[in-house]
Length: 250
Image 1 (cartoon, helix red, strand yellow):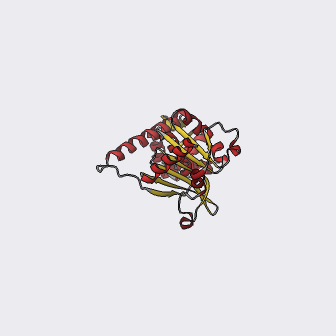
Image 2 (cartoon, helix red, strand yellow):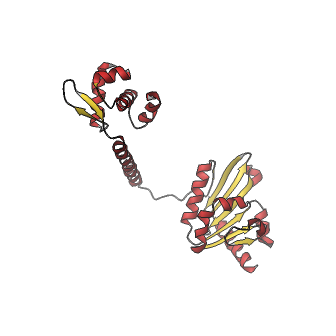
Image 3 (cartoon, helix red, strand yellow):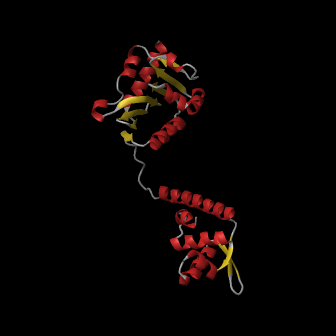
């Protein structure tokens, strides 16, 4: 059991001997240095150094006597403090790193690809959070809307939202502003948003246009799910405006 705990303790900054001594003392609750040495297998010449270090870092406490005993402090209290210290250190480090930049922030790349599921979902959530005025979702699969319905639904009260589909009946029961594509909008829905043959992509779930400046296409390449992203491209604004005008005209 102790051997299974050691990797987790090492992730907290302990070395192997420290992790072994601490986990052993947790099991014993209270013990002398000799007891800990015998139970943990840590060399006797290192025991006192390690115990004193763990005490200074707030993991254990010392009971003076003959012989001196060591006991563990309340684990929940110790680990809550560690968590608070870790989060505070992350925040402080982030602010220091941000302050190191003396150059003006460069605009994002106009075109790039995300290749992991986590990155795709993270960027998609970011789009839903930062949209300010309007969003057009060209949807190819009802499952996409059902999966992200909780995030999309509040948008219809805050922005101009257009969900464009091939057949409206396929999306029955989804309470969003859904428009069935007609004419040039249908042609756009059925044509690739990116050069699929050149990039090896096949459109799969959706294409999203945001505030006339960002587009986001979820596609597949073989068995992998990828996302193609574009920003600050004049064509995006033109496409979004044209789609909205065609939908209003219809």
